[in-house]
Image 1: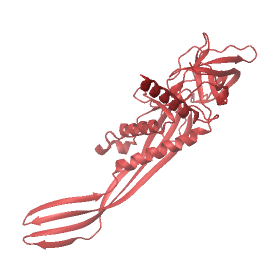
Image 2 (image 1 turned 90 degrees about the vertical axis):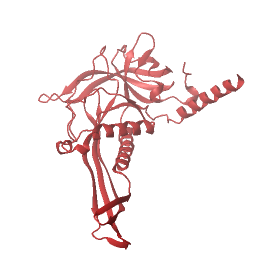
Image 3 (image 1 turned 135 degrees about the vertical axis):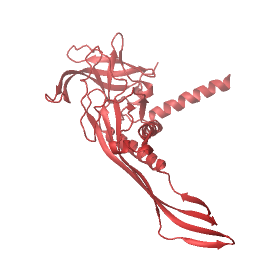
Image 4 (image 1 turned 30 degrees about the vertical axis):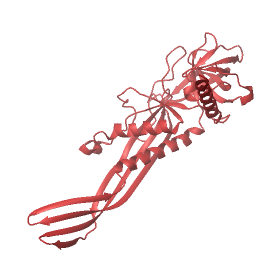
Length: 319
């Protein structure tokens, strides 16, 4: 029993040490969902492209989880047709009003494949050797390929593109084709010591996750108030890296500005109504003490924007 207690204590201390690695101003992890990668029409006509979109989405999901910088959730399919080409600002519903439900994720990751190719070319010469009644042929080969896609991170509440960039990976490998001919019979074998195109795709996806982390680092992290019965509760907790002592500024949206022609969300007007200091956390919820400004009362749906953390010595222990 003593050994079990010691193991539990060490596990808890390790978890606390990992949490303390997060800097006082580093935002919690963002909750994201990954849409199936889209293919241009000419790609869709190629039978070899079958399953490419979901496959890249699965790679992206794996890379996001492995980075330990995001909370990844499943997103209902099919993806909305509004997710168009690169650089498009998406049309989406306005942020939920107080009392309405909120999206289970903060961002949707949308990818569009722009290039996915692999070509094998002969070097233009061959060497033939005669062995008894058989002939041995050797022909060097070169394989080249490219993987490229555009990636966008879309705010799930407003539909605005908050990050957009392109990623490209290429490879060039060498191999050889050997043939053995005896009479009219011929047997061939290709030796391709190359990086498969799938590995190039995985490298591109991992590079995209690193770039995404950098692009989002300077943007504010915002959750939503979900309950105000006792302590104020927000819709993210320990799974997102939130801990006791984290501080948030609470805002209320007063107006959503949309384009009169397209309905596209252009921005919001909001006002600060108070501050929130987290006192306890659960896996998907965080509870805190609210200090009002001007007598304002928090409501379900208000935005909670991360501003920093209290020094470790001043934190309130999580329940």
